[in-house]
Amino acid sequence: MSTTDEAVRALLLLMPRLVGRAKRVPVPEQLRSFAPRHLSLLSYLLFDGPMTVNELADRLEVAPTTVSLMVGELGRAGVLERAEDEQDRRRRIVSVTEARRPAIEDWLARGARAWRVALDPLTPAERALFVATLRTYESALE
Image 1 (cartoon, rainbow, N blue to C red):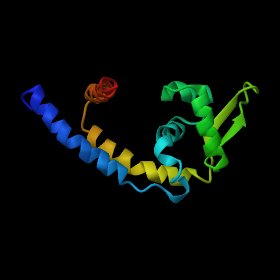
Image 2 (tube, rainbow, N blue to C red):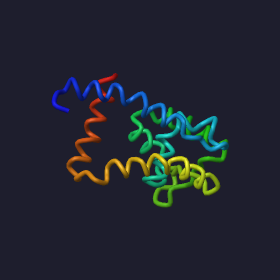
Image 3 (tube, helix red, strand yellow):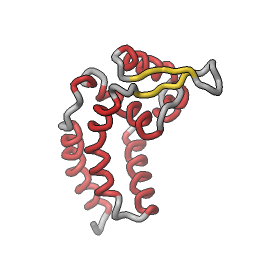
């Protein structure tokens, strides 16, 4: 791409196809009523491990009450569980239940594989620039 306008045109044509393909990834049966709006929450718990509601709220950039409601919904469905924090018994740690973990991992695996194919050839600096660019794009849309 020689100009910014050419790159913008290419991305405007590409983005709807990317979103369309992402939406066609089948959601596991037991997650169909929750998965689309809880994808980021489930991803954080799988990739980063169990954490508190406040930690999830910070990462998702939403209020803790919003996360608490989502965790409650997913907990009633048997997707998430809350356990007492061993270091501070006043805190609750949220994690994916072992019964639902395989379905969630399988669901996210296709996207993770595709990102690895796209990102592996890049240098660490190029990967960081790519992620920063997508974040800037997201912010500019708001």
